Length: 242
Image (cartoon, rainbow, N blue to C red):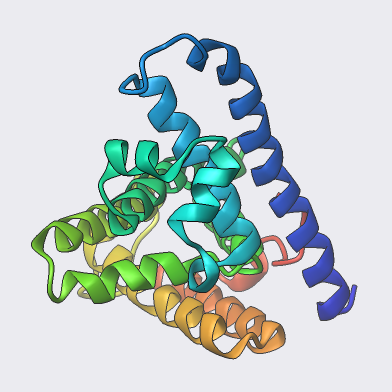
């Protein structure tokens, strides 16, 4: 399948998955929210689901508190009552999306027979998510971290979750009797992977070059497998349905 066609297919599939999740969540909670005080947790989640949908459709550059409020069916005063500012609602939305992403990544590797297969499935799912270009909000959080201690802690938490997920796969490899290249540990290899993959995602966010991003991510995957003492042929292809 050509890169352009694959990109369109995956974008549509994953975006629909996010929209379905958000719409389903809003639908199930709309009755619970009605009649509740505006300070309830249900209303906060309703706003986060709406913010997530707006982000997936418009991107960070075009998102406004007014658009979020309209999507959530509330007024701006209510949104500010719960979150205080656009920065706050976007940070909370990032947390919400991060939990969903972590669940999706873990679901993607369920059933893997080996750590090599689990790692490759994780890379394949990362590629699918990259086609949605969700990195903009995370990178904005990193930029804010330079001048805001709360944003810094939030960014460290996001990367900590990602690093922990990769470490689990590498630890599984070691538990299976596998080895790592000299001088490496599960933690240092996970750190390396997060750093390099994040660079690929950042470049893709800026350039929009799907072909280059897929190629670069594939090279990172093959190199990591080599550092784990496994040939790249042991893995499934990047374009497999995981």
